[in-house]
Image (tube, rainbow, N blue to C red; front, side):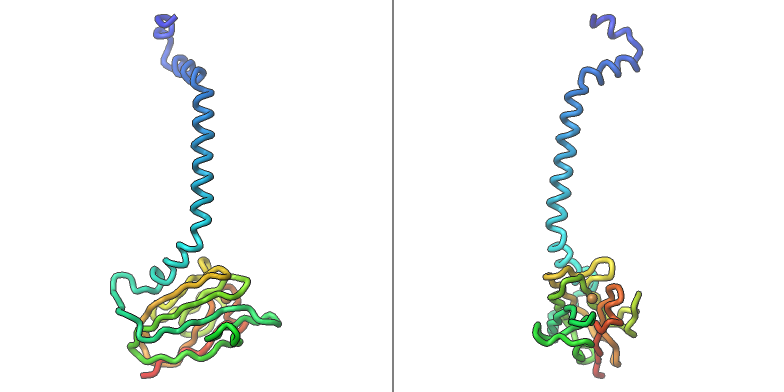
Length: 190
Ligand SMILES: [Cu+2]
């Protein structure tokens, strides 16, 4: 039989092999698929924490240039308010729409911590003008983004240099949150 089989054309020998190992291949395939599914679930479960860690650093951390320790640390709470409004505040019980003014000095290394107390996802950025979509972000100051915001119950942070004096704004760049009151004045004193 073995001799006969060797004489068969390559294609048929392959099919014979596939026939013989079909069950084994199916079991192995199912096992690999199962591993993939488990890996995907584990990766997904860990994702929010990873994002939270990376967002501030990656988006606004200044990349290769170390900014040194922050000279000002501001904790900002984000949440939805009654009446379809959205707001920011310096404490969990004082969230207003619009949010409070943030004042820093030109050249200061500023750290913003954003804590999302709301039920929907939020983000943060210092901007030139409050806009519904694609506001012009200043100072590399984003915490999260419209496509990758901070989930409810999570926080993110960013460290940046307020390099230019002037009256600017901060806002949540997610969807229409800015126009719904999720903004405040960001003043950089000369
Ligand atoms: Cu928001």
